[in-house]
Length: 117
Image (cartoon, rainbow, N blue to C red; front, side):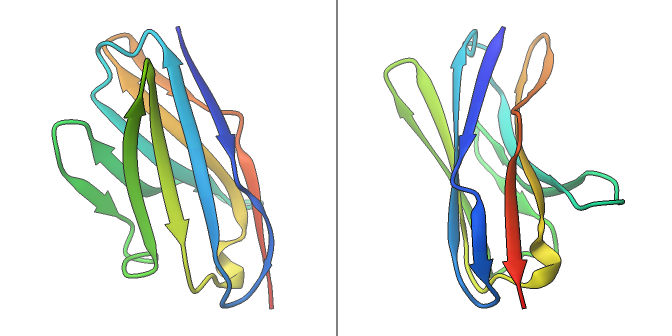
């Protein structure tokens, strides 16, 4: 079992910034990747940023140059952060953290990001 706890969502004006954080704990010995996905109301969940533990990060075209994902490790917990700058109303969504281990993909509970125009 992997536990994912997200934080950092909220309400911000267009052009503003937010920082999301996700803490992964539990059985993360085989952790191979972590990611951020988002789902806007009435739309399908989409990839925002994806980090391979062995190296390499990919971003959705819509967030390139504005969002930066990074990871850190402390004790037995892996942290995934995402700095979101120059936010746009179309970035409004529920953001989910994911973790890939040998038994499959785990998801966090989601955190709401709302960008007002």
